[in-house]
Length: 550
Image (cartoon, rainbow, N blue to C red):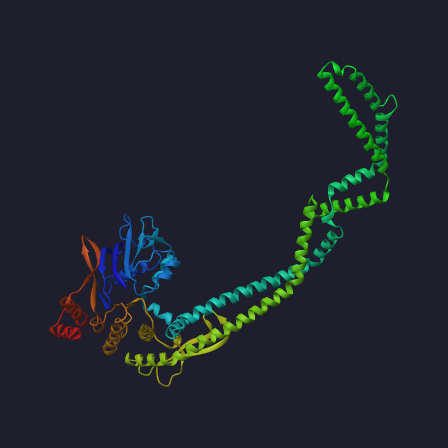
């Protein structure tokens, strides 16, 4: 419930600080006294957009702060969702800065207007004649019936399943689109894959292959050079080995004259051993080296294929080609297996659709059960409100398509007078009738669910006498379980309140100011007497005012 409201530097209000109690709070005042200003300030706290024109003194910032007791509202989950600190005494503050920009805070945490609206919708409902038009909207009519049918958990369950269903449908469409695209590429991918599979890429060592090619392609030059090298090493008397033997013999003669000569001789020995090993290897190379045109052609063919693939796929290594080959295989496999994937997805969708139908039917049945109860209560209440011939019908029809709240079409039909026919509420009810219907519906809702605080803004316009008394009784009854505010011009309703505030204007130094005052018992008598008979209060008006209050 709203426990206090502070307004500073807003419209005609310099500074206002007021506390509120539970029960029925009455707000009265002459036309133009500033009741709309009070509502405007409260609306800012609830998330209405602000601008600098609403600020009284543009050299100072405007502050509007409301404190709510939310202990009974079960809002901890919402606070967690909005990433806010929960406190049973929740403070909402709006500031309009001198620049025209505005800021919003919940429990001193800066918030966006979206977050503010998300929370405030659970705290207070400002109901004006304009908002009565909500009653003619499908969404609101569903909310009424579902609240009475206690469908909240059913709707939450349905909503989750519907979200999953839509995700599956979207995924299926994506798969079908992918299939169409993959089919276009399938033949080309298959051609590329077969081309890559023609050569055993995993068994190819490109470096070894290139060495083999160079050797076979240059066998004659290699043979010639091996032969000439062998001749240089082993030619009698002139060969390197014979020359080295002669050097070794010369050094042997001086090896005993010192360690340095011995070491030199040993090094020559090592060179001789190495040259003899080289000579043996040259013999082996010559023996094993043969010309093989067929093998050369085979290796050349492999190299050409590999180089063509490198060029075609813009890569430079066998590993890159293997990766491309595997990727192509994956695409081909995906294309070939996509039909099964699509079939499985379609089966999942059918299963979920069946579950959704069951859940939608459960919601429908709960609605169907509560509608006669709702209509009966509503018609009885409307009769008390001066509409004895009013008849109501709630038309509930199942549909084939899933909506966000089930599979029903819902429409409130209304017949105001005998002999007329049922018609859609927005076409058949006047503004005054809609106000009374809305009041009756809010009253019925209050029996079933915890409503936020509600402020009726002149909902009693166009009614008088006994009907206004009945409206007051309904508001009074509602205030037993919730906080109710009503802005009224009717003394019969004003007299029903637990607390009474008066909005009035004063002129100070050529400036007009709007103020709000809580009335005591004597002041209430005078205010109600003025509402009955005008500023010139008669004894009979005073007596009538006392009678109404008693």
